Picture 1 (cartoon, each protein chain N blue to C red):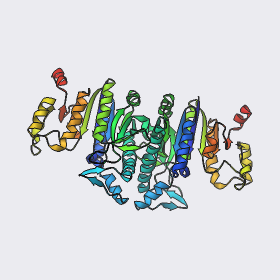
Picture 2: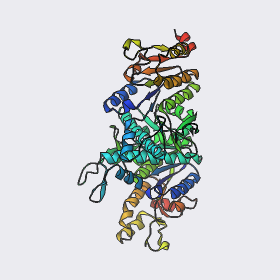
Picture 3: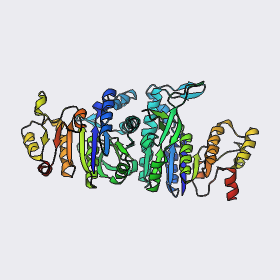
Picture 4: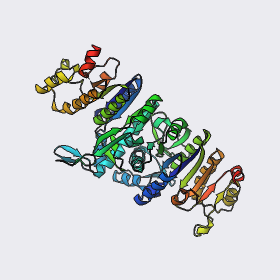
Length: 266
Length: 266
């Protein structure tokens, strides 16, 4: 059974018009599907109003207790429930979730090494049972980027990671998963100034070459690391690009596949 | 099949120690169960920090857009997800919900008559299907007092009403429902100063008498109105009292029953 796992980030969440267009495209996707959303600027803006100043260490945001409460409210409440309400109005039977709900995603607080990231959760396991039940019944799970530690605490977790881990877990129970990361570029580009330089297919082999040549920008590395982890764990393909491109029937963006999957389809 | 629908209010939500004790008692309830939680002071406190002043008309709070966003965050995010995480840590397989999730509770924005209550939803229907699925599978639904209008908007809805409507809908599909309102008094009291004046059983007949005599305080009337509505619609019993009383096997509080139900059990 095919399944689309779509990750949408803050750049779209923050823009009412872009968000509405995105949700329409998401709703039009055929077959079982699942959405993972990120945060967006609204959390920092509300934080400012509440006197919570972002706590940065070495350029990385640290999730202190006040920030954890803030993202639990904004990601798990405001953003998640409004996405669900709008999808419901479109006839999409969405159900909002965090990893705590039905114990779907367990994590552990990231161990303190050089940096104490605070209440950030590294995913330990995904419980596919409830998700399978939803998908079989035609419900559309909508995940906020939050998990829990099974000790009573919510934890802040990167939305790309949530999408990747959920995709891997559902591939493991037999779904043919297409993991789609919507982002603000048409895909992996050899030259950001040249629209024609889109890398249409990425395999471990050409990825290694491009990395060596320094062509792939640093910001892309964690995303592509997640993507290759996913295809190695059995996810059929990972597609990266603009939402309006990769949610069409004919994907338009960068497709990441395992070597053997490419061989099988070409 | 027996089912407990428990409503817990702000007085317990606001007190970490009382909340933990309550959740332990809730978790110890045998058989299928469902929790509905109210708001608490935290929403008004956060609102103040964010410069949202409560908008009151004739002594009733009006839910303007800023307040709706605030309660969506606080009730649907902060409170709901933390309750779920703590229940999960206790081994209770909780799933947090609003009425938008899985389209479980549809409402309409309250029509404007003398007062415009703003984004307040009057419940139109409860979709029992998803709730039945959860209960059959051993999941424990945990509702925030929020609904949606199927037109893309979240709406603020009284937690007593959410509990009553959910109890009625599940009674209708065959559950033998005990609806338990936890509140800050031992039950309905003839004299608030006299602990021995607890009314142990309330039926339409003695309720009418007590109302006529002016014994039942005004604040109790909406709660008891909800309670009688529930038993008239097939809910087995409604129990009102302190959480530590009514969550025990031997209920200790006021039991509201329909006349025929009392006859059948006495």
